[in-house]
Length: 200
Image (tube, rainbow, N blue to C red; front, side, top):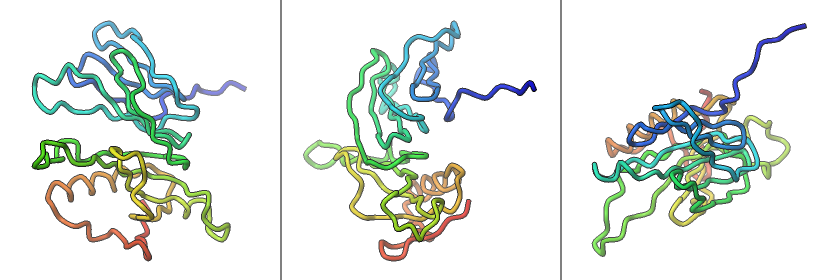
């Protein structure tokens, strides 16, 4: 019996800032293609499980468009920071829980402190906490957590929500981005002791 093929792309792709490169998540690696020739230039290898997110760092000014940095997340429980022009792995953050999706809404909204240093950069990740009690179903163990990328760790026990769906949290992340840019508190986020439930 003949069956149709399956997509090898595990997450939405991302363009480089100058639009000359396309980053495609293909299983455990990120393949980098030239948008001019369509040929693969290089690949980012290091994840040991399916790559679920790739986010290109936007330029802080027009001259920075030539910079080629990105963050990736994977079911192997790590978030990695790359220079994909070399390519070179710059940083690895191990949160020890599978990551199903990631968003970094505050790239351009991180203000400089008085001493000139930039404040911490944060990401929102959808994870599955295997340490939760067996009384909870596998789906209800999925949580939205906040990760401090600058300090390479999750933000304490802060749980922003328990996810009751296996689908990626695109709707939630869009709402987070809009709310943060509007400088409003998200009305549907739960507290540490009583997290909000989402059924996307």
